[in-house]
Length: 448
Image (cartoon, rainbow, N blue to C red; front, side, top):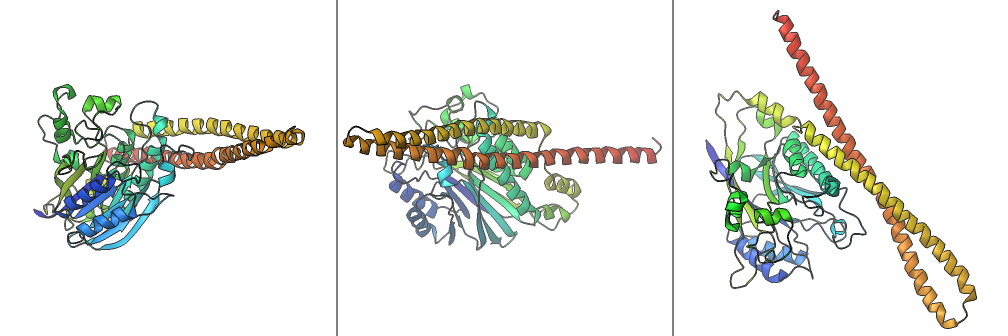
């Protein structure tokens, strides 16, 4: 029987100061819209400016009195969570890999992409951990998988956090911009290893036209049927800009998700309720009232998750407990991820050697300039020598940091995840062997 429900909203606000267009007007409009809604939990990404967070908090405080702004990296994680339920604890887990420090244009390394979470006290469920995250952006969906290795590491680390939370008896709700379409490896890791259910999939299982060809659909259909939240031609900030083949073919991408799972302890007894998504829909698809632009470069996603109780004669508890307490990662996914991480390790080694060779060349150039300055024929050349020396010294220092310090950091993180995946694969093999042995012993005992 269905009890109460939890209404969740996630939205990437595109609120980077000085860079995001129409930021102030859009944040004001977003805050106003949320204040008129009936959401119980709101997870916002790219809310970089603390003043913008305070603005939203002021607008929504009557409905959502509890809020947390999270700090990470040099420029902040851009993550914030607003809740109707009291917050018990809050924490943030920066991902170990967030791009290259020299890649200033991408900016992921500077903002410190992370998984933020709060634990709230729910009147019916007890402790619920709410995650808000924004995964590494660069890499898209096409091309070699190793170009998305950092996102794979993010997904793996996020999945482990969810598993830990569920193992200690908490219900889990996760929302955010995962920068991955549903069919990609990062989402496979999150579904299979973290045991998370996709609210959109669960609430659109019986959609009669969900298998329609993209060529038969309009942009509006892509939103309502497939949950497109980014790169839609209906978004004022996406319309007219160059898009990759995936976005052009499908009228955008589904990058934003609301996910949920039960605690492992829920399968020990029929007394504990379960979560089940009843409905989900894409929101913030219109233009800001009276203005010619959208609320953000992403659309929002909301979901209503019911709190339901199983019948007393439910006999599937042990089977469900086994499914949710163990990783369901397939051998194919594990092999693909390990292959991508291994390729990224090789690329990282080659890049480090190149960067360190530049460092050595810079050191030799500085030495040559110092020696050559003793024979400068004109005094006015000395300032030029000085500027060249300063530039080469800066370049050499940057290459030393990128090639040695960051290069080793990256490869160690890749190695950690690779070895952890190997352990999961070994564990699955051992479990399979144990199951086969049990079957054989049972058959022997029956005289078969």
